Length: 303
Image (cartoon, rainbow, N blue to C red; front, side, top):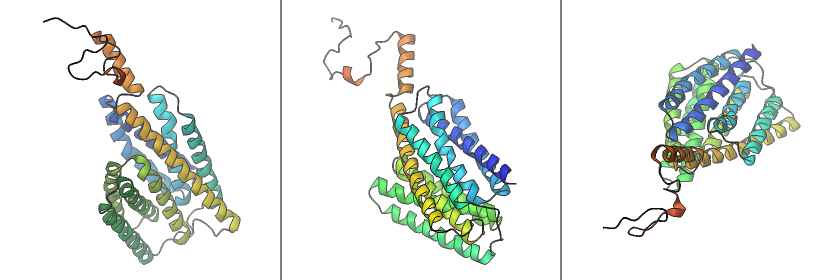
């Protein structure tokens, strides 16, 4: 049932949005409940994703699942009690419209054929080898951004293969291997550089790979004419731009809060002022003095 696939895909996207937002709070010294919520919702979102693939075509489910990253922007703003930046809202709107256009252009339907096991195994093996080569090349790249980009591409391939194997309901050992490897490589990408270096390419590669499999092996995406192909390419390009902008915004907010300069940092400082009676300017960069010099607002006591 297509409507169930859409419902479960939206549930997966919403769960991913909550998990992503609470992960940002966890990185900002949030309460333990936020950390537990972020950890718990990951498997829940994956479960919804599996249910969505069980009820509908992967060409429909995969783009909808990416909406989780888009929904995380207003949700994160709600959690930290601030308004999203105008550029973030533009990126949200562009990405959402691009995903909608991609869904209309691809016109994914129920699988018309079961994939040949031998062809599926060869295809998965070849792409998994590409992912391994990307990780190997990334290990020798000195620049963090380039290394994160290659690792993000590799994890996008692995996550895409995982979704394809769930849809095909074959080679479950390979499904587990791709899932575990994808998570591990993705963590390496996050540690290598900022989120904006790996997250957009991860999602675009994931989406392109799954749509390719849906067309070539599953028969979910019918043949298209020139205008439809052009519209799909434009939608993917717009989606990539929007995801890049959202990833950049996520990094800015996370860094701002962790370093104490954002809304969460201001809230912690205000609480300290009220509880301890401290100077409200204490700890701000403008008021820092060199060692041995008096600081404005601090009383000096004679010896």
